[in-house]
Length: 232
Image 1 (tube, helix red, strand yellow):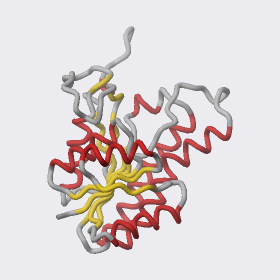
Image 2: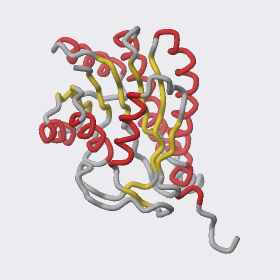
Image 3: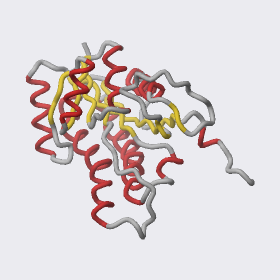
Image 4: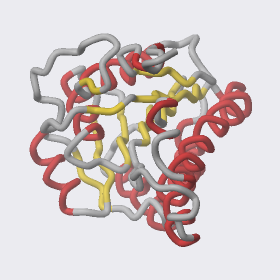
């Protein structure tokens, strides 16, 4: 059974991804520093790895625990993020900016650096959760910098890791409707501002399974980016 670590899991999109992959037959481990992540793991029957993704040593220790339990690390899905809010540069202080970049981009760096030595030659994959354009341009400089860094890191890492058979991609969701771990039955409406998390989870599964797909950022926003503003 192939093993997937979903890092930075909360009750929303990260949980939906973890649940969907578990239902598809992967051995899923949920990585989080909070008891919320432990609750998610218990709810979907996944392994739980307590870890502070901002700390490289904590990440390495968590992966050692996973492999020590007999887990095969074949795929990583990095769902950590946060720090979304609409704020101008004048309203954003340096600490918030730095924390947003840390929680989005630096955590991605930490999990990839620790995971790659365990994944070489397995035809595995690394998938990050970024953000659709209309999300990050309606946020703040820190959030935009963190998600933008992920998109460029995906391209660089895909080139570097192709020779060791590791694919690197990202999924860029639009605004996600509030639901519990992807269990909502809300309809996906093309061109609307929000959609459920399940289409994001399905796209992550496709990226994991697509042997010829690497270096791509796939937008999942129900086509909302295609809508022209009123008055044009």
